[in-house]
Amino acid sequence: MPILVEVTGLTYGFRGPQGDLAVLRGLDLVIRPEEVVVVTGPSGSGKSTLLSLVGLLRRPPPGTVSIFGVDVATASHATLDGLRGRMRFVFQKSYLVGTLTVLENVLSSLVPLPETNRAFDDARARQMLRNVGLADKAAALPHQLSGGQQQRVAVARALVALPELLIVDEPTAALDREAARVVVEQIRLLTRTMGCGVLLTTHDDRIMDIATRRLHLEDGMLVAVQSASSSPA
Ligand SMILES: Nc1ncnc2c1ncn2[C@@H]1O[C@H](COP(=O)(O)OP(=O)(O)OP(=O)(O)O)[C@@H](O)[C@H]1O
Ligand SMILES: [Mg+2]
Image (cartoon, rainbow, N blue to C red):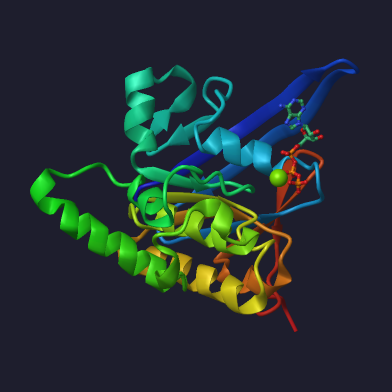
């Protein structure tokens, strides 16, 4: 089975006024298709930093991060753009485009097809909005939506592209139980039907069961978490 994400001995930090801050300290992680890897950890432990490195938003040190088999540190901009086309990111904040309608935001994730196929994209985007319970909001602008509804649009925008790798930072913090379940089920559907791999951070106990594997980030390292069902009696 191909490896989607391979992180080996990743060390990463920030330079600040009070000196250097080492956030990730020799971290290892492998993600394969159909896996849903859930990372928990205290606030400030480096979860979003890890996601930004795997999500190609920052350059990792050479030889530490491979995505779809490509060493990110030494890849060209063109190669990185190619990798980005195969993944989608849902941020802790939803980052919808405020001047586009909800439907247009979802459509923006799809590579435009020739004019004759627009209707197909449109139908897919509307179906995805239906899947996250927002069929009636297609024509609304983001500021007319609640925070939780905006977050669901961001999830729909990511899922509609059928990415091979989905990176999700705290997707359900602003959602009630039912909406959180809807988001989780849509993500699970993508992994089961398309073989997508998922890297997701959360504090939300209501959605831990989405994980095929749980990891805890503390002191710059990832430690496996025994799930309740697999721990010895
Ligand atoms: N651009 C930056 N410059 C300097 N320090 C940063 C930067 N981004 C993050 N940090 C620091 O790195 C550490 C890890 O931050 P990160 O956002 O990865 O944490 P997190 O685990 O996602 O936390 P939360 O659960 O609150 O979202 C924190 O101490 C943070 O202050
Ligand atoms: Mg974070």
